[in-house]
Image (tube, rainbow, N blue to C red):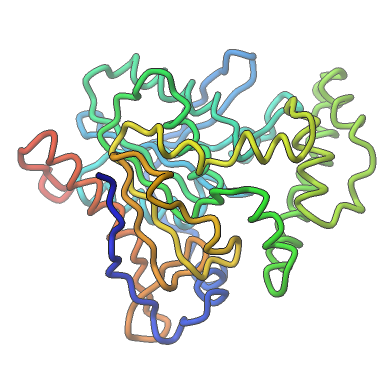
Length: 345
């Protein structure tokens, strides 16, 4: 029987508003955490590449991390979690979706909410290298949608001991419409602006590389400067670049809620009812969930915020407590032995 978990999360009294929860880490969290990361480049089956960033030692169990839209392995929520996982005795590797590692990728194709091929390629590559290593996954926002979709659509059950998805746009059309309303339009404006800049830079880069055919795919999209909503962007850009009929086809096929009932890996989904990127309407009901999925819904937290703590400007990033807690629980449920922290090694 799947579980609806009563959450222990309480918003910091000085960050009660959903938008403050969402914006605070972006504005005030130190992004220059000095972690001894090791970068590796993997060549994809279509002769493009993805970059992944490792932290930890080879003997440790491994957690694969997936960032959100316009994010990267340098996003503060990724780096903060990597640091905490290392302290708890887990190795981690952060996937940079195509074009997000600081170097543009070599094809017009990049990534989107339903693009699971690169995650599947990464998982199979790492599993082939390390057939006996315990592996888990964590995805945030768009990365969470990709993770849940991949878990549910996989014909063969992935050999994972745990998965966690946070602030997931479970029903994409509802989320796209939510970003057209009220204060949430500011997030839409910022994200779309970044995506347009990225698209223009990608076009110039592909021309510079001499990849004329790939560059033409972007040129054929026409002028995107007048795009003002995700409905328009996903229809005119994402759908056309990635083989969907239109935005409705993209949203229908890529929304992850429909895949939850097929998941066969112990999975925790963390959602906030005040998330400004969506409405409570996207939350799954019992009929949506397999017996492997636990849903933890918080009354506050915003979008990938979840900041607690009683002292202003001394935040506690609750996700960096809750996610490792679930991962430890699932790890010890399968391997009930002592899990050494990095301080003990």
